[in-house]
Amino acid sequence: MSNEANAVKAGLEGAVAASSSISYIDGNIGKLIYCGYNIHDLAQHSTFEEVIYLLWNSKLPTPGELGELKAQLNQESRIPPEIQQLIRSLPEGVNPMDMLRTVVSALALYDADGQDQSREANVRKAIRLTAKLPTIVTTFQRLRNGSEPVEPRPDLSVAGNFLYTLRGEVPDEIATRTIDVALVLHADHELNASTFAARVTAATLSDMYSSVVSAIGALKGPLHGGANEGVIRNLLEIGSVDKVEAWTLEQFAKKSKIMGFGHRVYHTEDPRATHLRDMSRQLGERTGETKYYEMSRKMEEVVKREKGLNANVDFYSASTYYALGIPTDLFTPIFACSRISGWTAHILEQYANNRLIRPRAEYIGPMDVRYMPIQERG
Ligand code: COA
Image (cartoon, rainbow, N blue to C red):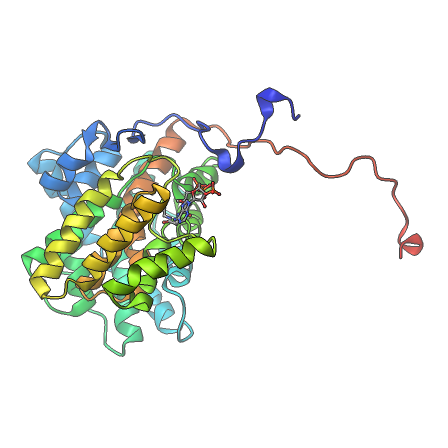
C-alpha cells in the first residue's frame, strides 16, 4: 500500500475527491466563485434566495423563478408542532449545534417524501430543510429564553425572517441586509469538511436528512464552523484593544491556534472576510460600539505580522453577529442556516452521478501477530 503513489497526504491536503460545478476556489489569488459567478458580485448585488436558486440550478433565476422559490420557501418555513414540542423537551443548557443535529434528524420522520429518492422529492426536501433550519434555530432561542415562538411572515426574506422570528420585531433594512450578505457568503465552499461529510453519506445512497445530519456534526467542530464562536469568546475574554497584542503573542508562545485565522486553501485574503470586515466596521460605527471591530483589526495585524496568516470567514462574522445582538452560541447555527443551501446542492449533484466514496487507509499497525487464546493472555 505505502508506495510513493499511495503516500498519505495528512488531512487529504490537495487531494481532489469529486468533480463539481457548484463552487470553485483559487486560493492563491483569493477568488471564490459559485457556478461561475464571482462572490463579490453576488455579495454586492444578489440576495440569499437568488444564491440558493443558483446553487441548485446552476443559473441565476429570472424574476418569475425567484418569486416561485420565495413562495416555496415561505410555505415550508414553519416547523411541525411535534418538532416544536421536541425542542421544548430538550434539556436545559443544551448546545445549539447538538440541538440542530438532533432536530434535523427528527424532522426526517415528518417529511411526506419519506424515503423517496427521486430528484423531484429530493428538491422538495432541499427546500424544506433550507426553509426550516432558521425557524428551528430561532424557535430554540425563544423557548430557552422563556418566550413563545414567532411564526415566520410570508412577506419577509430568509434573512428578514431569521431576525424577525429571533426578536419578535420586524428588523430594519441594514440588519436584514447584513444577515442576507452573511448568508450569501457562507452558502458554499467547495469540498469543505461538512460538505465532504454530506457527500460521503449521500454517496452510500442514504437519504438527504442523514447526509445533512453528517454535515451538521462536521460543521460544529472548532476547526470548521465552530471557529466563529471561538473568535467572539476570545474577544470577550481579552476585553480591550490594548490587551490584544500581548494576548495574541501569548497564544503563539503556547502554540495555541487562534480561531478565525488560517485556511487550508486560501494563501491570501479570504474574499468573504473582505465583506465581513466592512460590515463589522459599519455596524460598529452605527451602534457606536467599535471596540470589537478595533480589537479584531489589531489581532489581524499581529497575526499577519507574526505568522503571515490571514483572517478567514469566521473572524469578522463574529463581531458582525455580535453587533447585531445575536447570542454568541448561535453563530455556528447561522452558518448552518446558510450552508444548508450548499450542502443540499452537493447532495443533489452527488446523487446525479453517484459512486460510493470509499478511500483506503495506509495501514501502520502490526502484522501477522500470533493469536493467543484468552486463557493464555495476561
Ligand atoms: N493560529 C495559529 N497558528 C496557525 C493557525 C491559527 N489559526 N492556523 C494555522 N496555523 C499554523 C499551524 O500551527 C501550522 O504551523 P506549523 O507548520 O509551525 O506547525 C501552520 O500554520 C499550518 O497549519 P495547519 O493546522 O497544518 O493547517 P491546516 O490546513 O491543517 O488547517 C485550519 C487549516 C483552518 C484548520 C487552521 O488554520 C486552523 O486551525 N485555524 C483556526 C480555526 C479556524 O479558524 N477554522 C475556520 C476555518 S474557515
